[in-house]
Length: 332
Image (cartoon, rainbow, N blue to C red):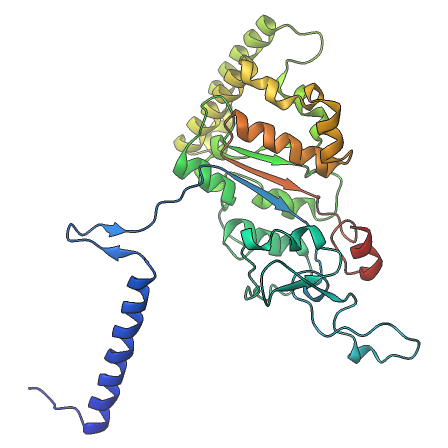
């Protein structure tokens, strides 16, 4: 049995199909993904083969950085509800896009940037910034019953290494010990359920990165190799293996193999930023973050896939402007 739609239903349906056809045509004109006769999706291939993320860790205020609002110079007695931005807005090289005063260098290159002002974070029931960082880095809203992979682990897993010697996922500048909310930071700075071979190579101090790819002081390469072989046998026989899946066990052993291969390679020299010329070191700045950016550039040139350079999240320091926000933002 078929029921004829009413006149109003038919009109609504025609309007829907009309709007759908228009939106489909617009998407095709914009060169959006389309289905070919073969059934495969035709979509633009990504041009980049590696990624450097500069992560300003903390909780900066949008009206004082990327999304300026109404600005009134401070005066004694000015009602707080009148204050939206504490810095005036500045023009950028793109018409109708403004940033906050203090971001003049970024303003000069906004024609090479994409500014996203529509992101909405979930209400995680706490001000813990690391919970939101977890969401941004993994796509999962915490807490989770499984270890979620960092976006760097996704790139390492899906795209593989650019150079089999260089770790595909390298994390620069973030300590995982001795800072606020360190357990939360550890929770997403991992390879997650992909396995340890896709986890990050952590380099909290760029100036010391070269030491992380050398045998311990007083131990030559041959002795270190023998110790590695003995350690691998110990892992194979460890009773702790019963608490790991076969996949995770094999992933851990492969990560050890990767580390051993790096330690005996010539590519490990890329980790030593002390070999750079003085003018290059000066250009990047004598700061942990600046040196981290320099190290990231060297490692990309050596074949890394994904690098994250962070100013490091410590509550109420660096880009966390929840306390003394105006003064902190001005300093940063």
